[in-house]
Image (tube, rainbow, N blue to C red; front, side, top):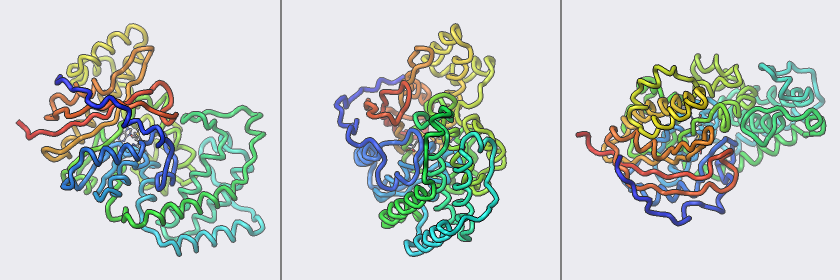
Length: 423
Ligand SMILES: C[S@@+](CC[C@H](N)C(=O)[O-])C[C@H]1O[C@@H](n2cnc3c(N)ncnc32)[C@H](O)[C@@H]1O
């Protein structure tokens, strides 16, 4: 492995005062989002004016995409989670303020009218996660939103509904996992769901209109794909090489701490899986609460035989050492860690092939602990890319300030690599 000097030990990358979502990024909440100010600094510091297209292969809510476009470039985002893709697409469309307000007034007028009997929206476990009053109110709102004929405007209001559905559910708000609240807490919580929805709509309209000048609709492409099994043929946007990759991959704890799929389950269930434009395979799995997490990197465990004979364990001496140590204590934990990095290795091979020669690749990764053992993501990453014609340029440690990354992740590294001409 090549030695990478940690050049910038100061805290200028911590962005202590930048925690919390801003601007267009407030349109929908998502776990583990990047700090936009940090991204702007990354773009300023490392990208050249000639770097036109940036790819984020684990885009989540799309922070990289929208900051990239604000900086005058084009962006492509890939994510396996159809809810993340739905949200990012809604964020990237061009809307007329007049039409948005017309639909808003129509929905508002109808919601203020006398309540009529409607067919309640349903999905697996809806009664566990919502009080009967909230099912009634959310169904009433949904009933009005799905009357909108234009898919673009309907999706905008479905995303507003999903935001509210997340806020009024019976799940605890202190974790990304679905975790039911105590009965007395559920009974105590009173929501004016319709009022909340109307407020979310109005603030979302403001956010979208404020950013209309950036022409996201011309410059952002969103692809709902699995980077582990990336199918370039199915996605025309992935046919051309990109100038840079900027991304924060998952940490490998999608079943435990940062459960992107579980977080999204209630939200997309109110949107309706049929409105998400996803693959048949994922649509079937999305009916299960952990369906997306099982399909994500590290979501399925490889056999001991596959792990011990994998390229991944043979390339990374750190992973090999951690695996055999963990195996002595918990075979399952050892398999979880390796299964995640085997998927990541496959993803890296796939996405690096989309990067032009001489292109920059910037990863934001964090260490985590498994059974008390540190799993040093950046060191493992540097080992995994060793045969991919990538040269390490910079490695910047930064503290994670605030609680956006739950659990044991307290420090991240910004790892900057450059692709060399193939030898
Ligand atoms: C750390 S989050 C990215 C957050 C993003 N930077 C933001 O600001 O919102 C990692 C993302 O990787 C996605 N992901 C996990 N496994 C994936 C896979 N195999 N293919 C594509 N995306 C995947 C998750 O759904 C999640 O949205």
